[in-house]
Length: 399
Image 1 (cartoon, rainbow, N blue to C red):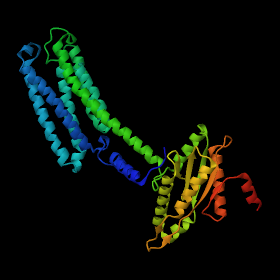
Image 2 (cartoon, one colour; image 1 turned 30 degrees about the horizontal axis):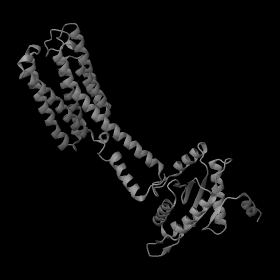
Image 3 (cartoon, rainbow, N blue to C red; image 1 turned 90 degrees about the vertical axis):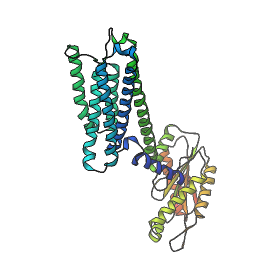
Image 4 (cartoon, rainbow, N blue to C red; image 1 turned 180 degrees about the horizontal axis):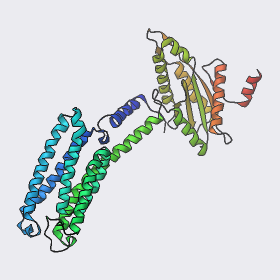
């Protein structure tokens, strides 16, 4: 596959990077108040599930002998009150988000109220019940992913101590265990209790799985975009020197049949920068990279190797094929039409040096040969394609 990035692709890539690294599209990048809104919505859904269960039990007289009805009714009122509080807290989180005091203290308040409601309901259905354990674990993991650890520990440490104390006092018969249930057998032997636990557990598990899938997919996508960003030159959007070095290293350990290295250096590029400005110099580099990307084959690699230097890695290529591709690139660069800000035509040419691989040469040695051939092209008048040949260089030295 051709290792390059077109301008359209680079523009799209930059937009994606802005979306996933900077903007509010990623849950992990949300402001703390937006995360509070997400938590409040989830908390409201949890309480709606509990309210639905309690209403169902109240409307099912055949289940009453397993339930502490007075406590159920009291708990139903608390759930409705908690639901109203959570919905009400969404308003300051969304409307007063620019207030410094709201940003600092409201997250603590929201998390604390949510934890308190979960702890109380955990005691009511049993601190060692599957629903309570899974809710606690889910709360810890999701909380640590979304919020600052200080906020999470501020709420979780007291909650943990509360649940441990309730469990201990229940085991010592100082507190009733799971006081909302009247069970005449072990909990796991009671179908009503088992179905109730499943009813409480499944929504929590599904919600956490969906949330973690969103977070993980966004994290993976962001890592992929960062990797792409680290591989390309920010100006020309072809591979940067680091990526080219990686390609050459892979060629050393996994050599293909034959490949050619082509080093390209723009002639008198400093003059373009000095005479027409760095903006025109940058435009020249961009146009040249576009030309190279369009001419090379899909199996080839193009990269920016230095200031005005480019490199081509022509895979599965003979010397003749490499010369043909290099000559086409040279002619296309020579025909490049650039004008200065005052309408003056800017002439652009480049010198090419080619070196062909063999079994005895390492990629870095081949790169050195291509570099020598390129400087030979400059010594012979520039705007030329030269191939590395030992005897040719020897003659040049003698001359």
